Image (spheres, rainbow, N blue to C red):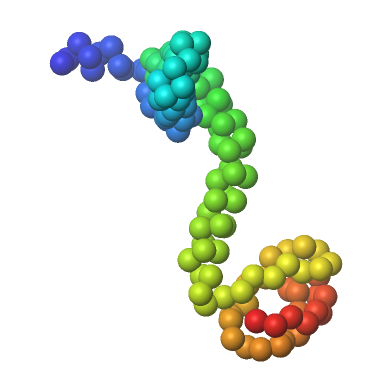
Length: 130
């Protein structure tokens, strides 16, 4: 086991981008099995090879930059999922409105009747029923 420790020394290892490539590879392989498409099964090995290459790479700075670019690409999608998830959790107690002027999302408690809403961002007043 000591030889493996020596081999992996100064290697990049696993990060979020490598895990995404691994998951993509598995998904492509599963889809290829379901629809019986041998070309897609072959294509599913490409992300797997890239994942292994990244894990065994010694160029840590370049792999870190790739991971950073992956995060910048995926962060809007991630934040949208987080916002949607928190919106679903508070759906019973709060209502969400969009300001007609600046389009920002406002969260207000349910059951207050017809109220005048002040947008904190642009100071526009509009009337809605909660």
